[in-house]
Length: 329
Image (tube, rainbow, N blue to C red; front, side, top):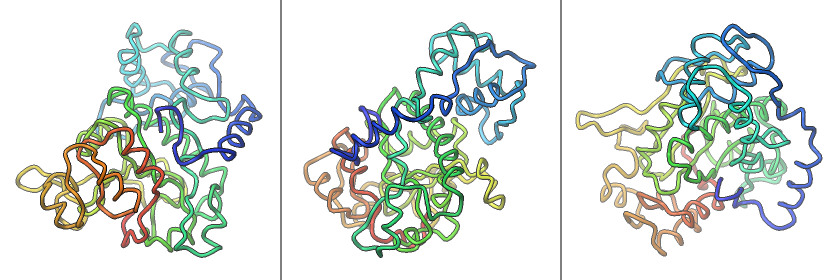
């Protein structure tokens, strides 16, 4: 997440992750060695595009990651420069690139997210086969190398959302899933989680609708909400090369009152507070309470407060998925 690092990895496991990241080749995290400006082409332009895609200001206009520095790249770079207090000129200067280098780690992950936050969870309700993929990017619909690439692209979009949200931590409680694990927990048959292009998440100090609004302006192609679960689903489906049929924008529809709707036609969790609480049988709270934390720790569907604090997001990340997603992504 981002009060430091993932809260669902601790002790010796964290030590192993840190050790592995230190041994990973620096080439995984591409350092920039030249000013990158309009008209340029090449691998470093593509690397720049991966990092600043979320800053492209036009909603529902797909940002091209094609290695050619054109108008879209310049617009995204100008927005990035403005956000980080740099002169806004649409040219990636050494100081701009230094900021981007600082936002990435040696293993190719980003400053505020680890690969370990996105690998598969483990569930006592699932088979040994499903759980054999825990802590990995294996067993899904894409090869592990492709999954890792997808996760990395998603990380950069989340870094943008995080920055736009006041640099508040984002907690991930479900990232990649193997086919057998996704089947076990009742995930959608064509779930983006099977490819590493999706993350179920919440943000500290930000309500879910505001969180979705930030994502809509950050090249997050798929945005899902639920009437009976307290998290948002974000994905970068148009970047998913292994599922061309999923290359479309998917955001919640709205009712006549302007409320965003889940796929079941009901208002997204939190938009009708008392209704959401009755529907899920959980405690309604504006902010985090001890009872809310206990319900999250028990993985009760729908548990959560409207504006979660850091302790709640840590509990959410630690809990992982509910036992039955009932066909949701």
